[in-house]
Length: 152
Image (cartoon, rainbow, N blue to C red):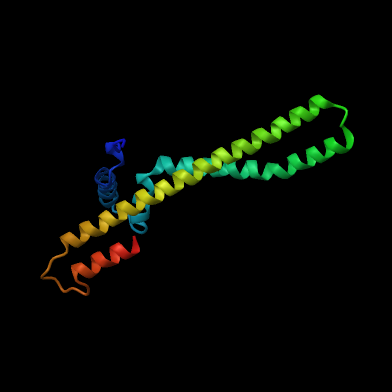
């Protein structure tokens, strides 16, 4: 079985997150700091997902135009075989490109979700370990960990 690259381990992800979190805390930013830190942690993935969904939607919206072109060809240009072959190849290429880009989008989005889930779980476990037993607790450490396991 192939070994997971070191950069994709939960510990490495958490270390990257911790560095980003400390930089945000140093800048005295207020509001949405956790969301910003999680977003910055995987900024390249978010950009790739945005670009791929734009291409996916664009290709999907081109299907009605291609259908209209095919209907127009069948009604008016049946004698022009070259045009028919080119139209078929264009429709096939757009369909294949749409499937490939959408599959990549879905795979990477699911991968990103799993990575974010593992980082958030590490954040909660880390916080639970630092939770002082002498402080006024509303929940025990076991309850906090149980909530983590159920919700992740």
